[in-house]
Image (tube, rainbow, N blue to C red; front, side, top):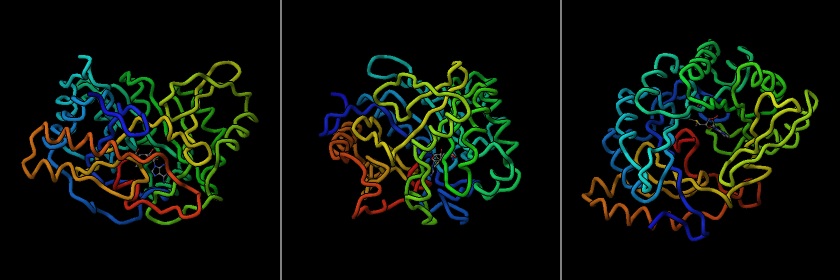
Length: 329
Ligand code: SAM
């Protein structure tokens, strides 16, 4: 029986955080503190948990963090994941979300191990603005090199994620449109969500979808492209069909009704929504001696409890018990 929740959504997409350490300190995500708050697990533990999920119908696995490229042994882990098969006997769709800083050297071995797609976060196409957001000097060139290396390696489509924050990078929208067209990558603007450690979120800081579209239209007329129902991004191109822009608008245009995702944190807890107030301790069950079939029953019961939707911006909104870096984006 495939995984579904009590709201009738099929769950096919698992995001696995393999560390909550990060080498960047993006203002919208984490504080300047170093080190992990929660423990990392051995890869064998993630592999067993992912296998249980895949046997319940998961088809896509996205590795994330923290910064996943910081984990030694990642290439072997991807190779082991690529040995798993979906319920239909297909290969898993294995993707990664990374800040790209260390990608240039790792991308070929990752691709050879079975990685299919990469999403790279880059919040400005200007080195100074980039440093102000990431709070790390001199990262821009490494990330740009990582994006280009991912393209060369054929991890298509290469997607570049940009979280827009008023006062930091809203002037980068048109620059990113040019970047998408010149580099042949999909640029995805993400509305800033209240998941940060530094408590800077307010509705005024969010650069919302309508404003992004307005800015893009000043550059060239945009045209919407079709997208799959469970896709988080609304897709656009320009009048001449060159370049692709995605807009992920969880704040102004929530897409919870089509959510097909669950998350596993780096310490092995299931989170059914980015805005969950609760963790579900799968690793604890596993370490306590649960069999695969008991773990599968546990996953099924947890997924049933998936929240109908988030409540960002509503009166009574409660900030989730973990910030993005400790959940896995
Ligand atoms: N370190 C990797 C990276 O930079 O892509 C993976 C982890 S990061 C938490 C995953 C994604 O979440 C990134 O694209 C990041 O920009 C996004 N993100 C982090 N905090 C966010 C927030 N408060 N609102 C919206 N997106 C956020």
